[in-house]
Image 1 (spheres, helix red, strand yellow):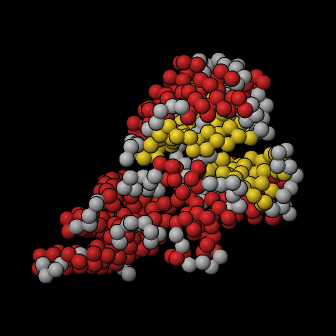
Image 2: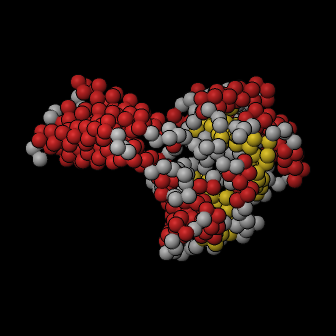
Image 3: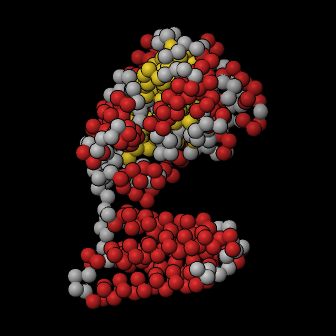
Length: 485
């Protein structure tokens, strides 16, 4: 299957049909590109176009987006509810299938330089492309909006990554970068009070002490006749759609309001809907194991009150197919990996849980020893290497005797290190080392048990399994002895 890159530019135009049609034609006519969905809002005066395809085709379509937008949009005349810096406010790229992140980061930088040089446009890099930590989050770059951009450009701290440091009055500036999936999640309330919407947004957003990875703003939408709370969930791996929905619902109930409907702007991965479906189905007392993925998605759509949501337009899996062979398990964020392990429909060998058990023990040990005196610095370095080697085993196609031998060596070496440093720990660390000892012992026993299918009357394998158990018991007993437990 060919590689797929996704792009979701946000354009500061949501009213003029001819401009939006020109953007659609420019992107859609690019060979190798498919448009997933187009979302426009007159009040917000913004259009979001989600498209994907082969990497170079997507970059060509993104360049065409700038050409059309900068030709037709004059920021000096732009008015709208949404914060923005320029005609193409932000242009994020999200790798979907078969793309190396290092290559993509470099390619995005070249694209940013090309846009800056071609259109004499200030370009900021954000998210994973950010060169400075304070530029990772979009609101920080966009603070003050187009109206304060000239002043911002004069501040050396906010000099653009590419392009001129003087204002391009017609086009403004643009923000470009590599980011993971996010959810632009708008929730409409049964109130016309803007102050209520503002209060709810303030309560749930991270910058005001709310939920991490949530950005929130509120506005009154004349076309709906009601207030809307607009969220960006910037880390769907950590904050689920269901959690965000219930947080807004709880805040709304606290001021006498309710959610009446919601919408997704742009795209979301199907797994985020499946996760929400599981949550709501379980809450309603359904038997999760009996529900198909399609049913879980439908439960999510209904429970989240999504209006006019069609998965075939907004889930890349429905347009481009699954990621070939699945994403490497060793590279999956923990949240998604745990959901895959919990899902019977996911083709994950049971042995993967043993590898994860070992990895958990090694990672917690690395965390513990990182705070030890300098003479123990070697232990942290070795634990990190052991952890990396163990996670690589997640991507083995077949769980065979050699993989198990490697795994046993890694976990036993980690156990031996734990024994070595246990006598040097302070009294307040005894509980931690005791718990770690139990965790390592359990991991060793699991590895030994995984040897069982490979015995088949093989005395050498049986001896290996016996030795693994024996060494594990020895290390555990030594640790308990040193801790006087």
